[in-house]
Image 1 (cartoon, rainbow, N blue to C red):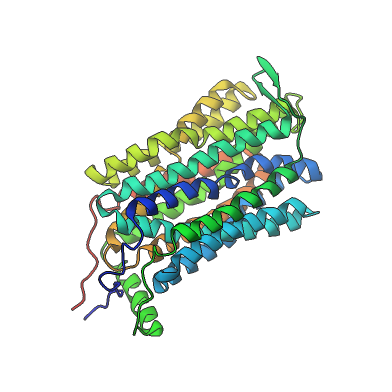
Image 2: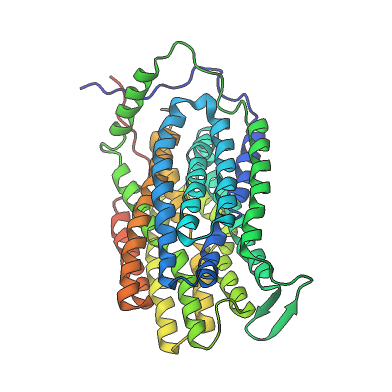
Length: 445
């Protein structure tokens, strides 16, 4: 039976924006997209303490962000491939929505309204990745893993800078392990003021992105029936899951996303719990600084290791690296919680294990995205698959966040880590089914 592939753009419609401009803008702007996103895990215990809300309710934040981000990413990627000439507008609106979401968050009077504002910011952030990663995957086919990893690494710079800066602004001091306390030139600044300032950064970024990438998607296609393109792209996506290994790639990515999106919140919330047992308050400058350091350590090592891992995967294949990282992450998660349980509280080993985890934190998602693009290449479906993958990850992340929330609520924080380790282990088993080299999609008859 004949199959139908997606409609490729007419010759000459690509390349109207130079590769160097496109790569620099997309990779650089991702740092601003992430500048405030990774500060949310640090803000969670601060906001909860400020509003007097139960700490375990902090796990509702990744659930809400995952639900709204997942739906918008899944739908957005598909429509970007239909209207690829509007890609600059999608990217610009994405940055604008992130800023607007955090502006509303800064003035929201209740926890429920803060969650609503975060959902808007999550929608905006999710709109960014399908078109951005799709453009990079299409423009740099021989270095796809490397450029996708570079995109993630630049985002990780924003992820790393934001909690460290936020911790310094919130506390007005930098304190570490009780060895020193460095008074900064300012006193503690309200988290609302800090979050609200992101609006200026993101609104400005949205204008710059639109100007630099206005021709990135090529000229508007003429004489093409949108309904026909929709049906063709939809059939092309279904074909991609037949005998190519795409199901295994998506499953591993989803399972990894389930654990990651809860784990990044679980670590600072659990650490705050341990420090409170030792007699500290969550808003104590020492605690704020220590939480900020751990949130940053979950991303800083990956800034340097991510592109290296991606480049190696371009040469030796994705599977072997994915299997190794999934196995290592399972062991690290178990070791982290066991170190705290054996010590009866916080220990420096907890910090060391988190730093090792951060070295490989985003590598699996980078490689599964590259593997999906390997299969979808040439069919103008890169954004569709990458959007579906991001949506898949975040929606499954919502499921795990809710499940871990109830487990922690009833049985204690430690169970959350064991659940995360079990999820990672399941992903490890599935990763053995991923093809080491891309398997071609069925060709049209």
